[in-house]
Length: 189
Ligand SMILES: [Mg+2]
Ligand SMILES: [Zn+2]
Image (cartoon, rainbow, N blue to C red; front, side):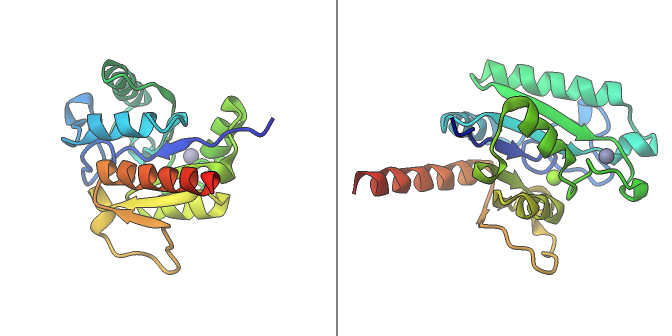
């Protein structure tokens, strides 16, 4: 049986407000107004949701892995109260020059989730606000959506080719709903 695709979400600037220097504590973790609706509509597409985030503030010592875990527990709990299940929350705690394979645009965390949840990466979708998110998606052959919240206003890097640009998470979900509908139409023909 062909394995299924997943919906990979970046965290800061997509689900919750981006903060320069990072989201260092639970108190600084603040959802966008559209996040509950966006997550609900994404979950309704029927693909597992997974969050993959760079948290170099851990490596810098500005926050701790315990605090990141606390934030991710809250995110999973809140999502569940909105009727949304988040299948995985993975983060890279390393510094940008640490040479790890898990910091985006590295693909280590995506491959880990794909193995654990039996996900086909080429059928997967990524929603992110940073060029490094889009680059990771390109490397893995995933469909990529860049949202204009968070760091979405920063200029694109050379060769940055998101498949779609959306105002925010809700607009990204709306685009995926339209893609899904047009696929259903094509199947009927
Ligand atoms: Mg981000
Ligand atoms: Zn890492």
